[in-house]
Image (cartoon, helix red, strand yellow):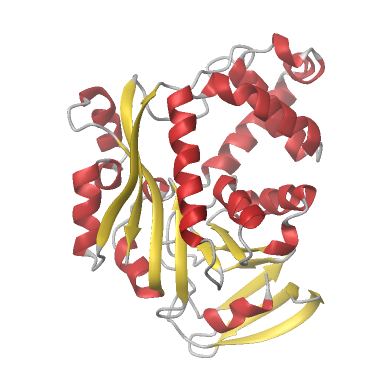
Length: 332
């Protein structure tokens, strides 16, 4: 976590001022520290360079940790399957099983092998149209931000696809965020492997209750992060509180008439931000002025499931073939 963030942060629970005690740093980066709120006495540590600003009162499900935990537990119980998954020729595995092999290699620190597998299998997980549309949105965001100054805060960074592009191509500091410390620890190791870790700060917090001061964030980005935040409630109002400039949200929207996917989306509580009209209405209601940029459409199919790891899936949506509209929501 870089020093410049200290001036941007406050207590996420009560918005009180933080007092900092730093025990270890590396150049302009805090490695081990603790922030204490002067008002409510809540404490927030920095561990392994990651600022941890989670509040205990908001329920959340760390799906990546659950998947990793279930996968590790399953392989411990079935060592013969682990042997086949990890030692056989990778090209003989089903696409989803190749992806899971890459995840395990990442956990073991074998990043070069993991990256090679992911690069190879990606075209068999996602349609050409989906990959083209996603890459187009990332390029649009990077080009939009080129030439400006100041940190870019990326919301719900996940595996860091957008963070990596921003760190590589912009001469600006980047802040990767997620509510899962496990994901951020993985991201830091991955960024170190890529030689980008000194360009990126990492913060763990719940987007529904961020640790930023009013208007502290000039530029906020996200790659498909909004619908992944459970029980969003006043999420968009909270983001409006902290952003003084522009929010660039890479989004994709399902057709209103797609009843098969719509039923699953509704059951998961994600309908507000996965349909275009609803998403725009919610942003406007939260006080944003919104335009839709760089729109394109592309065929999307359900990601394949494992064969060796029978039935194990990668993405929960879509559940049926559909055509998605991709775009960048430019909100001010």
